[in-house]
Image (cartoon, rainbow, N blue to C red):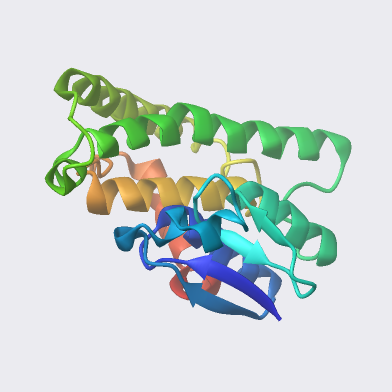
Length: 206
């Protein structure tokens, strides 16, 4: 059976758990306590030298890190339901949308998180408040952009649920719950999308 090294509430493992649930793939969840820096210990670094979760352990003992890389492996071993694209254009379009969320939203949420009060209390970083003000502003502008874009389609990359929706959902939920960056209530299209995606059984299971 596949094994997923996970920590409750961590957004990147959640991406993989939603993907696994969409595919109906069974796996064993292995608790990795990142508050105790278990992901930086030698036994973990042998699986993933980057010292990050999630890590997927295959049945033959090999390991994969990085959430999208793991999801690509899962798509290859279980092609349906398709979440990465079914034709050349869709493959490119979904990849584009997913990368936009990672580079233009997740990066800014990450800056706000690192420079926010929770990480500051842990004493591992000296917060840069100016950087946080900028990234907070960028996140809110991106929410507005998404709200406008979602007027045209029910899902981020078109008419159906894909990996790009998983990436966006985990970004918004993490930002709202732990970074004080909940989207404004008046972003109706974004919230309708959020409700639509959150109602999926794969999401509630994660």
